[in-house]
Image (cartoon, rainbow, N blue to C red; front, top):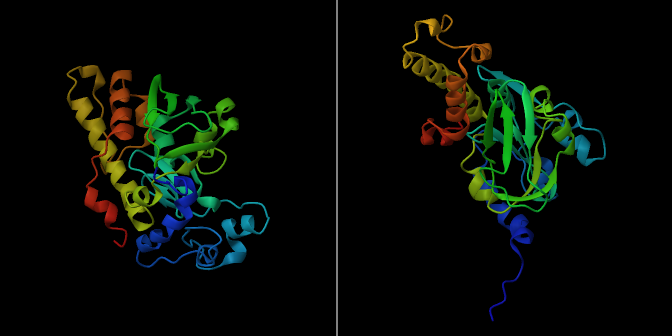
Length: 266
């Protein structure tokens, strides 16, 4: 019988050495990653460690509000990776991955009524995380493959935390990844994530326009605001069937050019 050796999870720190190859141009690794304490993390503080949330936590302090930037599509935490179906991934100590829904996604959903999370040690899939909002149940696509290490019990009882604090208290699950290096290469990061958020607003406008144009009911006559970009409030005025189609297109399908994912230095 052939010995399999270390199991997959134990090998993750070794395999994450390859992650250093995907550091975007102009970015630098965190000092904790360079020292080998954590397997992979980029610096988002220009080495201003005294004001870095991650550094403060690693030294036993209390986490600060993550650094954010603003685009047309909403707020982003600049040190996280983003899936095109609007979930985010944060690489943490011991190669765990914290997962949540991004600001663009929670804005589209509106007030979240219910969140269904997988059980601990369950392998996550496309229907493991389900959100009920706007009278529609939407499954979220996890940004990475893996098994559940921890679930956010607080958000089960207070689902609207995903609206009010999508990058902090509104996180969903903590995962033990199984194909982290491969998964990260297919996610948006840094400048590419910001530009992708901008493009998603144009895609939202196109989705709404196409759905309205497909309807011949004169009572549904609506126009987008000047400049062609909608605000998220327009979703409150759409008929339920159109809203459902828009949500499904935003969370279940990607119309973004795959080559753009690699354009992190634009």
